[in-house]
Length: 95
Image (cartoon, rainbow, N blue to C red):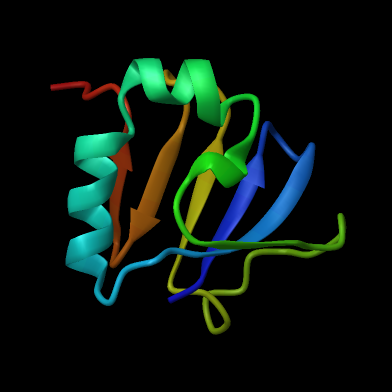
C-alpha cells in the first residue's frame, strides 16, 4: 500500500508505505496512534516516526490516484489527515 504524503503544506512530499496489510489495519492504527500529543510532539518534527517505509519525492510530484492508495497531509494535530477509500480521518474529530 502506498500513501502520498504532503508534509507541512508542501515543505516535503513523500511516498509512505505503511507496515499494514489492509486499509482497515491502517485506519485502526491511525485512530489509535495519531493522537494530538503524538502528532504535535513527534510526527510534526519527523514524519518518518510513523511506522513503515518512507521515500522522499521530487517537489513537483502531484497526487495521482492511479499510483497511490490514499493521501495524507501532515502538519499539526488540528490539520493532519489521512484519506483512503473515499473517507477522511483527522487527528481531532470534529463530531
